[in-house]
Length: 438
Image: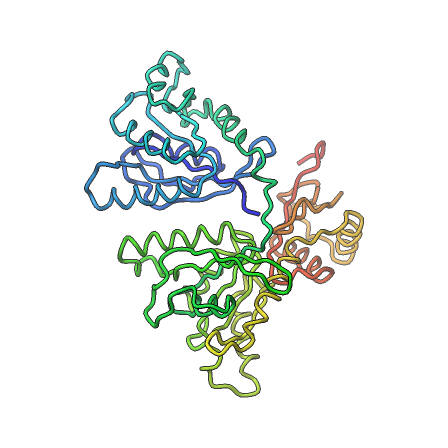
């Protein structure tokens, strides 16, 4: 299940990106002392006091500006507000309240979402600078200096307090996002699965503008099929309507349980397909690679084998992929998609017992010891599966810095050989055992 989403919003140049970078622990947003630098929404997962969440940074909101760029940025921030569970509203303690702050505050009140009011750039932590901000009508303001990491913990304490019940919320249906390039046949596939002409299907690329959820029941199981806009290369995104459609497609990936990645088999896997699949992989989502329009491909006895070899070559970063060759138009093998989606999701939620995992890893280390560096060798003390979706394994060791990429791959292959994790990424995390010398 997707983590709760915290959106950071506010007018330009109030320090939103600096706060974002401090919380997620790495410099993702570009921070410059001028407005309008952050234009795209940026996502990153983070954790505070045992609570996991996804944080989204947005561009500055200038609601009354007629400038095209500012309208785009405001629209993108609006999408973040719509999808957020909690909103951090940033203001500038040095500059004080502005008319733009009042405009944004009014918009946030209408959203009916929990809002934490943050007054940034208060380096001396003075409370008397907060009084004016009560006028926004958004409750108690929190004094923060993002640049000096002051007050960040208080803001996060308040934000995660709103998570009560969110992380335990379970859907009664498997959410399947259908994603891919424009005109790959996504809507045709959705209609085939649903058995109804729910999405408009044409030969014009980009017909589907928003992510559309439709419930489906099949063989006693419930699914929510999310049809999305085609994801183009950035330079191919010309108009603002299409731009926001692409953003919503990425939102659909974030909240999906399984992603169905539709590829036009007549074109083969392209660079853009690889980027889309890579995004799904980075989000830790189980997935199914659907080679559509298979009825239009000239075939011989080795055609599928050649396609599979090409996929193995292009998707080296996710050797776990599961593929199926279909025709949404004729219905050929389309019925297998839900069955495979169930399978990869079951693999993504699979649990390995502590005893079995430790026996497996210790045997693997005995068979193939880690290489030594400067006379030191990586030692494994204990292993456990921390979570599922994606399956995440934690190894307690003497020094996590001694792990070489090739040995990490060896450990992953060992786990995959012992347990079927087809269709889902897995994560390996090393933690240094307390009391061990570095």
